[in-house]
Length: 466
Image 1: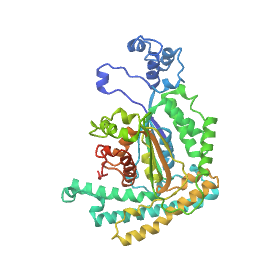
Image 2 (image 1 turned 90 degrees about the vertical axis):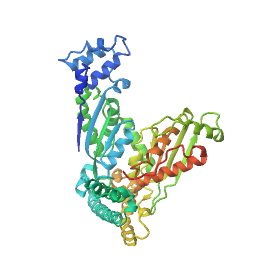
Image 3 (image 1 turned 180 degrees about the vertical axis):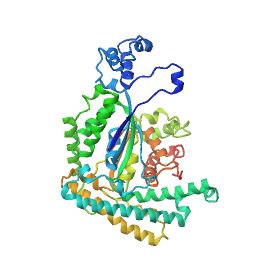
Image 4 (image 1 turned 135 degrees about the vertical axis):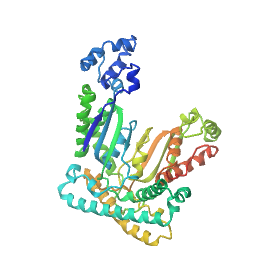
């Protein structure tokens, strides 16, 4: 695992225009000064000693405590985190919903068994490491075989991958590479359900120093060693950008107690039973503004979308002030990792395995041999998910590393109607993963039942490949 803080620098155009450039702490200090003085930026900057930037922070602050959270929000910090497990990357995103960033994608990158993190670094108990290693070998063998099966299906019938005829009929090298990429991604998209969450990924985030401190508090308070290691590495890099915040970037008793309490609640959620594919039944609850009825608001909602010509366009106040809770009883972890990254509202996903999704519904009926092979492979995913559930019930915190990306969990999202519509449009649009596109279509169908006048005004896509 490695974490690198990356500092921003002014562009040549900014330098040529004589614009100031400040360290993250100086930027925060200068902004904080605005709340205690109306002298203007140039007066504040005149107090900066270019030979001693660190001392300048204190000279600007004086009466203002840098530990104040609203001030820490004004110190932007970017970090690149290499070598996190898929589970830890998901956990980081749950704690940083407002961050900007990216993660290495299992939809576009072929992963190998040598990318799996060593069990001792994950906190797998010594008496379980042999069993876990066998599981890793089986799941990766299933992944490799599934990639081969799905790429073979796409090669035999380009229609299943929905590759445009214009590309298939184009003899150019560029078109051939695009076709090969689409077939490969089609395979990765369906085979990734067998990938174990112990395989490493990379995450880049840009957020305020305040958010990094909060993340450190959570990670350093966690019972597993991998989050703690990441917390320490982030803390070390944060010292380069915002050293005055380090006193806050420590483990907290409240965080430690809260993590353990939620874990105990998760243990109680799901009884032991057979693991098969759980149905992702959607649910949708709408809380209208005070005094409103659904039939009264149907036309108002349609009017709120009258200028909505793309998913980033205007949505009226009637939708912006309407609360929505939606979700599914069982979503594969692969899709949860994507759905979890929506910035708005609150997501709830207790990690109690409900089933295993094998993507068998994507296999064409005429591919009998492929279907039989995939059914055999599916047993590996079910066994991994079942074992994770057993370890959860036994009180073993490292149970999370027994998931595969096809392991299913409950997932819900509470937000406002305009953000729900945006998510529905984004996650069914060009390049959308076939599975979460299906989930969002189901949720939108429930919305149309309540507000049929909005059908056709919400820009629901067909998840065409990119």
